[in-house]
Image 1 (tube, rainbow, N blue to C red):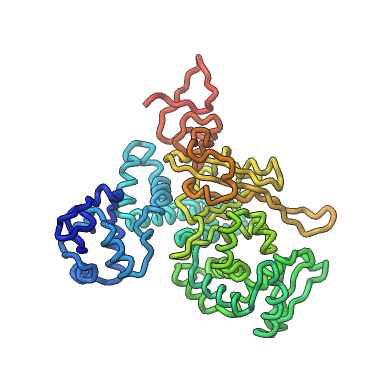
Image 2: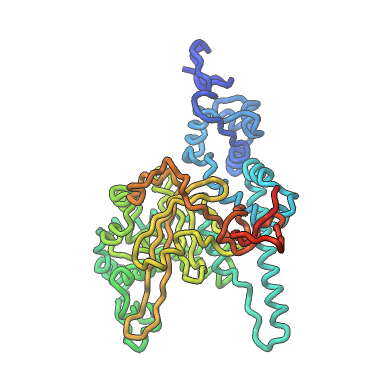
Length: 494
């Protein structure tokens, strides 16, 4: 059996030909293939030799003239040791939304169309990402300038633009919320310590004492403003008395990340460009928390449990002895090449709509302007505390998602002590929904009743939305003193 470089998948002396066009959909991967080759410092001639194809054919692939065939795809994955889904447009929706947000004014004036943005993302993704980075830097500069101007008439110190957490979020965002080196290191330690689901507090306490000479103690009630405190000179790790067993285990696991993988944490934040002191420290905290979740819920074991339970979050909570939010966040990190779980998006919001956490292993895009959509079930969750709500939602670009949402409450214990309530959202593309217990009883083939949500009113394309808080950017408002409309911002026809 020989590979034929014509428009056929395989041929045997070209006697029994099966058209590639009819076998699978065409896949044009020019920009991604060129980036992959250049990142490995290979010439076209060298790569063509490795793949066993002609240089001219490779050149056509990189220019997007010819589609990628299955045999060549398999050879590429073997040569570069990557998954075949490297070439699937999983990130295109997210990047398209980012670019569109960066070009908000141009899109609104009709100077740039959605088709233009899609073409840029598909053909020149590196340029698209660079454009997004420049836009974010510009926005940060504008915000900082505004803060400076606002403080000119004040004796108060002008605060820096609030970009520290955003930079760390972006660090995880561009990695699809998966840090392989930390995951593998945590899994190795979990095996060494013989951790069992839901029974990790005692082994972690022993590990801190035997491996690092650190003792675990509980803070006095008057010191309970701190959830935990580590004293390196005394080799003591202190916990607030109100922390549950799972919360204590998470902080012990985080401390082990610093003690056992300090250099790895430093390298990861440096490679991610998190060099400013505050950003570097916050990045290390985020990575330590990632490691803690991976240690308490080792990848292979946790993925197996999630699949067996059909991603039933509450049953996983009971099995692993940690909170609803921790389980949801861990589920959003299961993207190990060759052993991927359902690609989830994870979000945490408060009653006012402030989004304090957002991570995504999917193409779902969280807007940075204009808030989020009030029709999203993550806000409805506050009306039914502790109950898991399920929603099939559609985005303006036609993509559909299954979302679950539930509230979580945190407190310090004691009468009259204020607590914190958040809504946790976990969502995946609808094509993965059948793997989830939450799809039971839903007609996933008929999504006509899917809730139409958007990324935020300022960037949403739904002119007929009755819940809209701002007028659409790409339509002229219809303002008539002789009539009114149920839609708050009606627009004129095209």
